Structures are given as structure tokens and as C-alpha cells.
Length: 438
Image 1 (cartoon, rainbow, N blue to C red):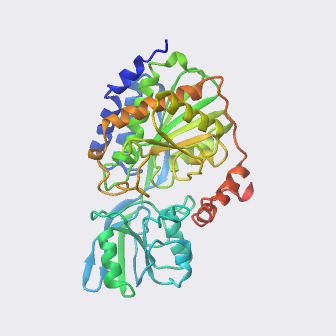
Image 2: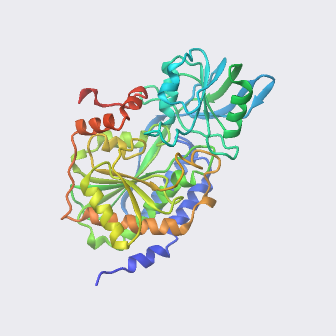
Image 3: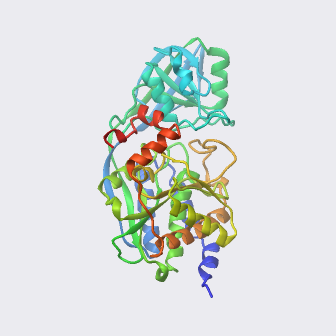
């Protein structure tokens, strides 16, 4: 008979939820901040407590960014806004141009010297989601003076999210986020009028780190189970991504009860500095031996949605493994073969390493509460964390089975799929297209 005691232990465990509470209680976990370092240390201690070995921090330098005051002056009014991380500390004035969704074709009009405003979402019938940084660099490429990112979610919630590139971490033009309500007011009253956007911030040198730990046999081949610890400074970062890191800790706890079933080494990596350009995972990917990585299980922004969504990126063995877990537990798991180039799996998957991006499925398009003041623990449920940890533990154990093999893809195939999925254009404009030499 299959031993299932670990399921009961995990479903009644408080290990993951306790760690989630510890992370959100820190407050600001912005990349390079004291709070991020506190979260990294707490995660190191949590992984040690559940029996992982060789738990340590791997530190690296980053471009720091610290928020000051920001404002939008329009007419005789001052409208509420927040700076987007890695915006330059600058003031600009120009005609406000409301570009609606900010689709590529919306930038075909003349925006030179103007301040463009775009939505955080795209139309429901649009064929792909357009990331914030893509919209920002369309503005930069077309010589806009400033950038306003307007939330599509109601509730007086200005959105955050970084700009900048790996080569130029500080962006080219001032960038701020405004709530749906402020965006609507700006469009209604001041579209076509001159406004002023002012961003103050500091950009010190800083350090971040990745939390590294191991479990299982000491094999050459390994499975990476990952999340990111950092969060934006304006909120607790409960869903994004305290939940993912708490789930990694709970999975590690469950694996401690299943050590004898593992045929492959499991390496846990809880990254720093994801929110400012996947810095921690890019640092790790540059020095890792990709050929030794059997699979990546990256967890980012789960628990808010009860059903797990797994992007398997077209790796058939990963698709089959996930389907098998869903059938075994008679539990829904949503699967997608599309490429998802915006979390810590991507620095590996873009070069053909088999990997999942794992989140919670919701009905809304976009981040919902994420990247706003409203990303708080009150919107999450311990039940969801426990259920998801059970499913993901079984997935990791099945991936670690010696009888399951995975096949890496040539980078040219990943590049071709990005072209097919119409994602290449955006990646090229944001400086994230690495395939010119492939």
C-alpha cells in the first residue's frame, strides 16, 4: 500500500503558512533592501529547520533603487502617483497622450516629447499579454518624455513594477504608476494638455542574495525548485511572492518525509531581486551547468488562485508528469504550452532547460492585486497553500524518479516558438532577446 501519511502531515502543517506570515511581517522586501536580506535569512533558517542540507546564501551585487516622492501636476491639480522602480530621478513636462491599452500599433502616432499613459492590461480578444516593460520601451523608442502606467483594476490602487534593462538598469525616462481612477481622471480632464511628472529617488550600490539548499541523494543531475523572496516596497508581497517561497518551504518539509523515494538531488533556490529584472536567477543561470538540470519547478504568485496553473513550455515530459499528478489526486491542474518569459525559470528555459512556471489560476487577466498596496496575506488561504504543496511535492518526486527522463531543447527552437507566439518583438525592444548569436 502506498504510504500517504505525508499528505495528512502536509495538510495539517503550519510550516509554510508560518513562513509566509514571517515574510509579510517584515514589510518592505525591495531588492537590495534590509528587508530583503531579512527575508533571505528567514528563508535560509526555515529550510534548515525542515532538514535541508548545505543551506547558505550566495550574495551578488545589484543596482539599488530607493523611492522618494513623486507627483503629477495637471492644470491646477496634483494627482496621486508612485514611481516605477528604476525610473530615473527626473522631472519632465509635455502634452499628455492617453494611448489606451498601449498596444504596439498605438505608438504609431507621434508621441515625441509627450507624456504617454497606457493601461496595465490589453483587450480580452488580443492575442497576447503585453508586459509593462514592453510598453515602456515603445515609449522610449518613440522619444516620449515620460510614462504613466494606469491600473485597470478599480480600488484606488496605483501599480508598481520595474523598468530598466540588464545593461542599463536605470530607465531612460521618468515612469510612474497611477490608479484606475486617477488614470480615468487624467484622460477625461487633461488629455492633450501639458502636464508635469516628477520622480525623485536614489540609486545606491546594493547587494542581494540567493538562498541555496539541497535535499535527496548527491547525484550529478538535479531538479531545481525555486521561488523569489523579494517583493515591491509598497506592499507585503504576500501573493507575489511570499506565497511561492512559503510553498517551497512546505514542499521541502513534505520531501523530508519522502527522502527514500528520491532518485535525483533536489536543489532549492529562493532568489533575490526577481522584481527588478530576474537578477538573482540570471546570476545563477550564468554559472550553472545547464546540462545537469533535469527540470525546474519555479513557483511565483500562487495560493491566491486555488487551482494551480503550470506553464510547461512545450516540454512533453513535463506535461505528462503534471497530467499524471492531476489524475492521481483527482484534482484540477491547468496546463499551458505557451512560453512564459517573465519569472525565474526563464534564464534557464530560454536556453532549452526543461522547466515549469507555476502560479495560481484566476479569472482575471493581469496581476489583479499584485504589484499594488493590496497584495496582502488576508487575500490568501492556508488551505490553498497546503493543497498546492501536496500536488507540487508529488510532482517533484515524480520528476526525481530515475525512470522519468527529460530532453533539453536547442535554443533555436525556443527562439522560433517566441517568434511564432508573437513574443519576440517585445523581447527585442526591452533588450531581453538573447538569440542573435544562436
